[in-house]
Length: 486
Image 1: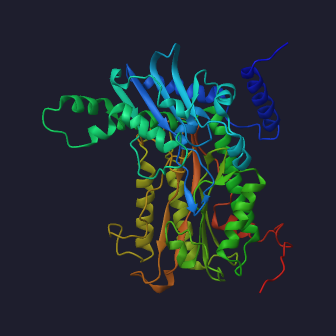
Image 2 (image 1 turned 180 degrees about the vertical axis):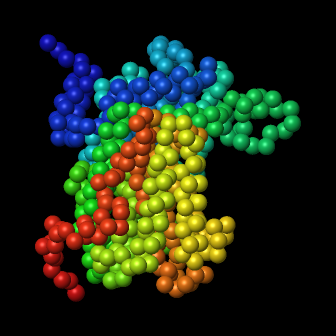
């Protein structure tokens, strides 16, 4: 029997993907999940509309070295595609283009023997159809000749572009996909200040809508599906175990970098691919810097607290867990007073994570408790005194982003939202010097259920007494001693 070339290529792709998939984790989101997410978006879209999403750009680290590629969360949510230089079109109604009837089409980066030798196997068109479930898929370079008339749609939904996409030598890269799309919808023309009476451009501009799409995606992503919760819970538990292990391993002569490394080793041990965001590990006064990421203090110090805000990213889903602990295993009187005040505010806030409650309520509760507590301690003059010791909010969605999109109206079932009050009193503050350098944040990831809030990160001790007790336990890292280097 003579086999045609198309069959041979498909058979090769199948064998290659089958062999590779057997060596990969088996708990990724399924193609049915992504297909359902596209269908749910389609239900929200207005009649006669198309939604357009692009893959994330490749980010350059330095010279000829790029950062490890990370897919745009919305693009991954809707497609499952993890590679760069791609776009997807999702239509409200069925389309008939080039003899095919469909309501979605995926454009992917082309397979290349030379490129794959350097950077790994690509899915290609056949892989996208087989593994991702797209019935209609093309190589990216085919978008230029793709006979779709965007002028016929009442709404063209897409996120506005940022000036951070490089033009590579590949004439079908993300830069060229965006350029071609802009040409097809006359994007550059409508961005210009058009003369009065230029009705064509004004009408085109009316059809292009970014806020509408952002609202649709926020409504979808703020409520987690059963499949998402499995991965998100695992990311959170991995992160909580990281906090637990560093409590046992901590000692005053440790560096911030080493403490960060303990967390991230635990992440890798459990198969988490990345950190969900740059790790924040601040000792002493560094803990008063909200997004401190230098993590280069070589000695944490005997009398310092260390604030550790980190989250594992597992199969795309990221946790966000913060603990603050005493380097020597024992809170000083002042440290304990501040810590227990933050904990009290957190507990009261978590209790408000109930279906139907306004999402700004936990923040208001925490602010009131902390303001009263700071006044009682003499750190501020009264509860109404304006100050910067608690300068941030307490609650944000987590998921594929550490700050996941949401509408932030009322708590709904299967939302996962952080609760993270904090107090930060940097050196030189307008209060008694005994409080200086104390920075405390406690952050947990809360699942909203019909039965009430569930703390998914509770595996990491939270009370001051539980932390002190945990820090007395032996660590598996106690005997992990490396040779000294000059």
